[in-house]
Amino acid sequence: SQQGEEDPQALSIQEGENATMNCSYKTSINNLQWYRQNSGRGLVHLILIRSNEREKHSGRLRVTLDTSKKSSSLLITASRAADTASYFCASGDGGSNYKLTFGKGTLLTVNP
Amino acid sequence: EAQVTQNPRYLITVTGKKLTVTCSQNMNHEYMSWYRQDPGLGLRQIYYSMNVEVTDKGDVPEGYKVSRKEKRNFPLILESPSPNQTSLYFCASSLSSGYYGYTFGSGTRLTVV
Image 1 (cartoon, one colour):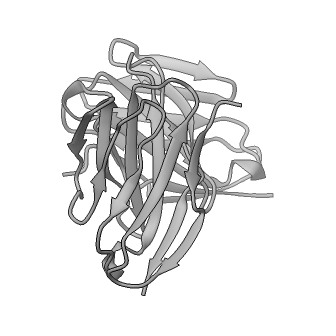
Image 2 (image 1 turned 90 degrees about the vertical axis):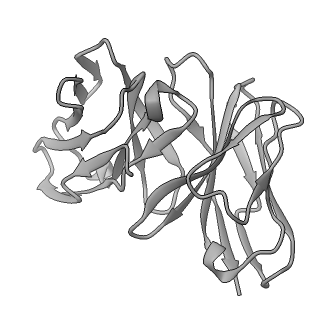
C-alpha cells in the first residue's frame, strides 16, 4: 500500500498565489520529506520534518505535520512560474529512513 | 560537488541482453536506493542498501539485482531485461541519521525492445 498519498493530484494557480498540497501516510514515521521534480529530471529534496516537529519553514516553503491524523501539508507562498513541477511526499515504512515510500505526487502549474 | 552520478543517462537495449546501470555517490552516505518511475504509478523502490554488503528488497525487486561492495557504488543489474522494465530509473543516497533527505541522481531512461 502507498505510504504517502498526495492531494490534489493536480493544481493550477496564478503567479503570486499560494499553493497548498497535502499528504497522508499510514504507518508510524521517523520523519516526512518533501521533494520537487521538474519534468523528467531527478528529484530535489526540499524539506524534512521530524515526527516530533509540528511545523517547519524554509524560505517560501512551510510544512506542517499532524501525527495524530497521519498527515502533512506543504505550503508554497507567493508562487512563481519556476515553481511549476511535481511535488512528492515520502516517508519511511515503520519509522525507517531507508525504505522510503513515495506518493504519486501533485503536479503544480503556476501560470505567469 | 556533492552528487549522485548515474550512467548511462539513456539506454536502448534488446530483450534478454544483460545490462548494468551504475550509481556512484561522493558524499560518504550510508544509505543508497534504486527507484523506478512510471506514469501513473509514481516512484517505486526496487532495492535499498543500508551500508556495504547490506541490501534488501524494496517493493518491486523482481528482475533486478544489486550489490554494494564499496560504500560509494550501488550498481543496478538487469540479468535478462524485458519490455516491462522500460522505465525511468533513479539512484539516491542519504546519511543514516534521519535528519537529512535523499540526494537523487539525474536518472536513467531505459527502453527495452
